[in-house]
Image (tube, rainbow, N blue to C red; front, top):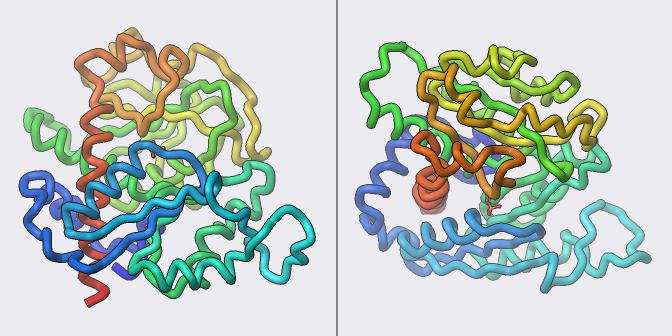
Length: 323
Ligand code: CP
């Protein structure tokens, strides 16, 4: 795998999931693979899970990792080609990225969307400029529109849960992506990416439920059933993935904060004892109730734990491609 920025970089999802689960059983089995290799992890936005799990994964492969919080510690970067840099941007990515390419073997980047300009965000300008100018393999730690390491983790967690609960009689699990209220306008990345991966995986009945006018980009959701009635959508669900996103069509807005959309114990009653997932961080008693998060259906901590194995499987494939 020469880069990892979306599911399109993955030739075989199930093979990658198997590799991740094999690392979970035996984390140090390839501890020489990354010997004398270094990953640079650049954060233009905050992170806890992605940052730490990537570092742990790199260490278990024998790689050195260096974290650089660009937004707090670095020069303000300009990303537009041919920009006249007379404002507050200090350094062009065209000058900075090749230097990262000299220091590191793999460049990992987290950027968020502006939520102001849909065309800019959906062109993935930031991560694409790093790909263009760094000259080394790039790993997305979440970009303007996608969060592939999170989505790989989610598929791993679903597969793991299915193996542990073999009593299921359906040929395919029903997975529901359920919009939740939030106090801030959040990116569509996790929802886009989850949709893209579940669709590409192809081994689930996939339903998305959200209030009207919260449609996501069809490029990612095509193939899923969209239902605006949350209670109807949740019926017989085996997995409920809870996530807020801001509007896509009228870009980056909050149209509603209706607390009725929060996932509660009562709402879970119509599901098939669904496992509840969330990428975290989560706003308790806004997106999900305490009873759900702290209850037996929640697999959010196991899900976050699996971030390590997703990152390790991807880094392993990237290291093998560099040989
Ligand atoms: N889920 C996730 O990406 O968490 P962080 O923002 O803490 O990395």
